[in-house]
Length: 104
Image (tube, rainbow, N blue to C red; front, side, top):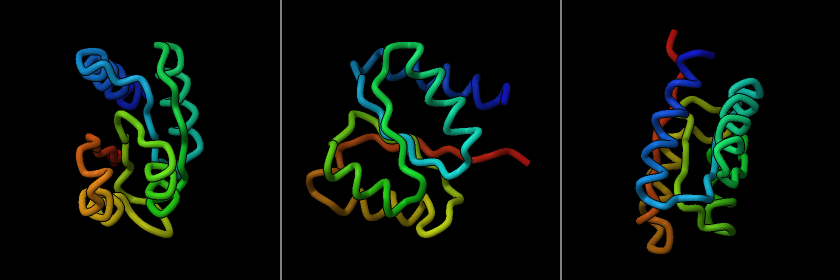
C-alpha cells in the first residue's frame, strides 16, 4: 500500500502541472481502487473507476477523461491491449495513459 500511495502522490503532482482534473482509474483490485480513488479525491480530482480494460475503453469514450491510470494485469482485457485500442481511436489517442502494476 505504501508503494501505491507514493506512486499516486507522484502522479498527482504531474496532474497538477497539466491541469488534469478528471481521472479514469482502470483497476480490477478493490483495495487498489479504494486507495487510489481515496487519495486522488482527497486532492480534489474527479475519479471514475472501471474494473477491466474493456470497461475502461467504454468509459473513456463516454467521458473523455484528462488522464487514464491503467493497471496492466486485469481480467477480460488487460492494460496493454486496452491502451493499444485507446491509442488507435482518433478521439482518445491524445489522452495520457499512465501504466500501473503491482510489485511482487
